[in-house]
Length: 138
View: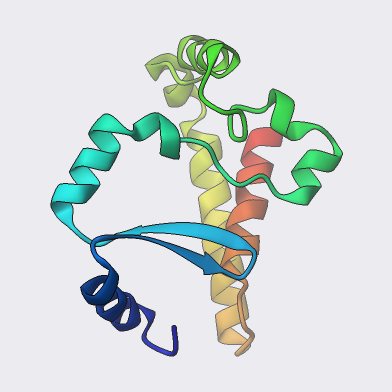
């Protein structure tokens, strides 16, 4: 796709249409380049696109069988989603954890600032993942 993948995908869509399947490394990716096709896909075919690629590390410890993140949409996923909505994501629970979220985000900002001041690179994906795990484990 080169150094400007958005332009390459635009050219591919002119040749092959607004709905394409591309193999990006080992991942098959669906590319929708038309608002009308995107609307149709998400309104009429949403279940076909609702599951996620499960990394090998998640499969090794069976996270894909028990985590709302990796479960396909179905009865178990719906039950977990309801449980989270009722127990974890209520206004009261979110208000109670606001201080912790602010503290962890402040720590992330300070980490990034410190690395930046020393001229060091930041793996933002790893930093955000660590912050998320710290929030979940508190």
